[in-house]
Amino acid sequence: MLPASIQITGEQLSAAEVQDICESVQEDGVRLLSVRGCQLSDRDFGRVCRSVAASGSLAQLNLNLGVVTGSGRTRHLADALKANRSLQTLFLHGSPLLDAGLVTLNSALSTHPALVCLDLGDCMLGDEALGLICGMLPPDGAKSGLRELTLSANPGISSKGWARLAIAVAHSSQLRVLNLDYNPLGDHVVGMLAVSVASSRTLEVLDLEGTGLTNQSAQVFLDMVENFPTSLRVLVLAENAISPELQQQICDLLSEGEEDDEREAPPPLQGPASSSALRPIREKYQPPTWLPHSNSGPQMVLLTSGLGHLMASSQSHALHGLM
Image (cartoon, rainbow, N blue to C red):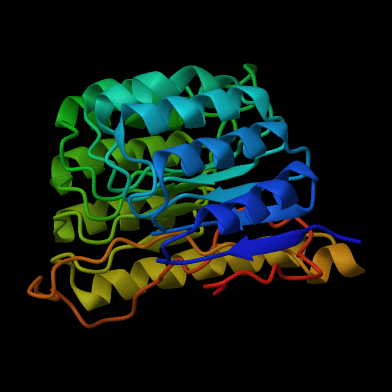
């Protein structure tokens, strides 16, 4: 029997419900645990973390939307990650971690043997935190690092911090997906990132939605995909002051490259592992409703992400608020 998925959104969790969750996780009965936006006591949060530490089956943990609040909960999570060996995806989007929170989590995150997908969007991070995150993108020949990283909506990071990330991305031996949407990057920072993309042999998806770009950045990317080999397959440029024509040109060129790769690739694997993959949808930052739409042209949008090799759950866990 395959492990279950527990997915609860925006609920007030009672001690009894938390007890049920913890027992299932500790008994290796859960592959995916999501309590995004849920309210629970500090004591119960500690119990959940201890069950995560003891689990040998948990592959995905979603604590998005303010579940991890305060230094105490951050320490509980760090302790859980140090003991856990199975987790591959961790979502902390919308958690007020600040740089201090990343300092607390850094050792556990950077040394976890299986973690490949990390969402730290809208976590109020700054340059100190970003420097630690860069250490999770080791260069060629080093230990395995993150394959997917989300840093959406962290406006406290400076141009210097983004420059450091650009260097890390250029030399990362694993990173395939990078989500930087809704950060005030501008053309100068994105120009540095374009050089990183051109240097990377693995990066396939780059989300730059709502990052203050103009046609200048689009022209740089157009020149790159038109004249130089690149691993990039998806570039999200929505909500920027970029002409629909330029977006379409880039889209067409990336599509041509993807078609060429498909013709050269071996036939896909058959069987249950190829058809029942667990593909989580990442938390997408929602901008204010007054944010103007700068274009209405064709856009490439990343909808799903991560962990195509995970088996899907064969059963669901019946709890109040199951989504």
